[in-house]
View 1 (cartoon, helix red, strand yellow):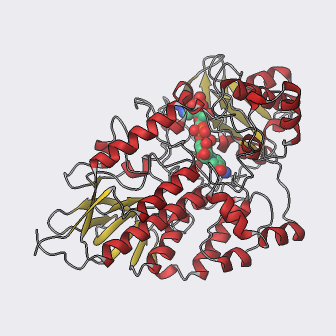
View 2 (cartoon, protein in one colour; view 1 turned 180 degrees about the horizontal axis):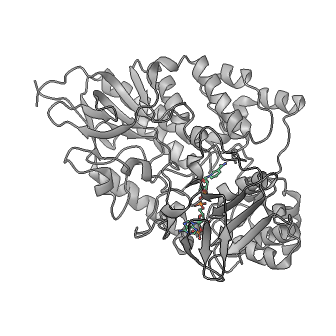
View 3 (cartoon, rainbow, N blue to C red; view 1 turned 180 degrees about the vertical axis):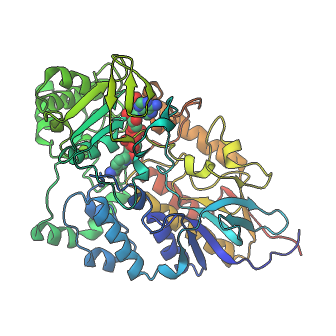
Length: 543
Ligand code: NAP
């Protein structure tokens, strides 16, 4: 090996969403030159791609944001409890302007391959325009739910109207007023999209395979009093997120288990806390996701609440899971802004494609099931994502041995805390596989800080590269699996949960998420920094 040459950039980041913006801030602070590539024509990541009607955050606005600057937190005003994609997108522009991120960002630039060069210790990054770029650190900020799953349905290319995945909503917009819309899939995206489209579409027909436990969002405007209260407590809010199992600003653990509560008290507690958002799961009892009886009681409570809102008992039955189907949170529950009530309208229809009439094919004019032909002007595939690994496997990212991440992850998707991968020197991933599933800005910032600290050590001590240790990866993956087995989320493979990659055809389900608590994970990241990154071997090139 020769001495390391000067790269074009210290760090190259893919993705100009929350991760890209956070990295620009933290890496500049670490004295790094950064180039962020994004294939989209605007910054925003998820909030640029997912422009479907009704798209909004499921985390509450005031903690679905970056916290590195108190000024940013104080200056931005959210208009409501959950912002839609446009508001979130405006917020991201506000952040980009405030931190002067634009000179570091290159849009409409797709990375098509990235190769670690053993001789130089640099990454060679090739973009779609045929250009190559070198960097010392290659960082993925591509997001853990960004690579769409396109189902293989016979005849899909014959449909005459627009047919696209929900996350590829036409950027110029789509006029669906007065049109007949078919939506394949019934997850969080469909739950958001349906009631909004139903307001003006001629009809909306949802093709559902598996019903979900659907929690109410209970949207509300941000009042001046609420905003003032938030802004006077931002340090507490940030601390709450940092110390919560899902990175959210909730008051939990509540120190109360369902197992120790009388049934009538449990019902009262469930009822009193029915105030919208995922809060209900975390601010009622601490054992809902680990104790099967607690989980069943919570599931039944949700089912009863769901059924109250649907007029037609037959539709209500179809839209609700049974407590025997799968535990609450084995699939990620959607938050509802009027989805269930939308089935009370004459122009919204539900088709059970699991038991009653599976889809046979897509035709020139619509969808053919075993029982009926449905005619549509537009078909939306709201069929989910190849979570955690999809974006990292969509083009070759090749490490020291020449093996790509996709090749490495055929059976399992192991990593070190979701941020590093053995055989991939100087590669960092923001929220990679085996990181927690949590309020994403919180996790993104924790990862970005760890990365910046690691780079500071590399540069401060004059290292050329770090090699993630195989034994550290084995140890982390074993720990993640062990924890996973102790939760009810481990049953996700029975119901195609993306949280285990079980939604992907011909793909072995695997442990993709660390369920030991995001707060515990953030502590482990800090410990790693304090202990000098024992998961990594630091090296200098000879020369
Ligand atoms: P999803 O939850 O994975 O749902 C996909 C839906 O498509 C499921 O109903 C699935 O049925 C169905 N499906 C998949 N392949 C199919 C096929 N070949 N034929 C028929 N149906 C098929 O996807 P999503 O709704 O896009 O949501 C994914 C995740 O993105 C969410 O869980 C959430 O984490 C995130 N998201 C977040 C927000 C937010 O925070 N605001 C909004 C939307 C999405 P089965 O269930 O039977 O497999």
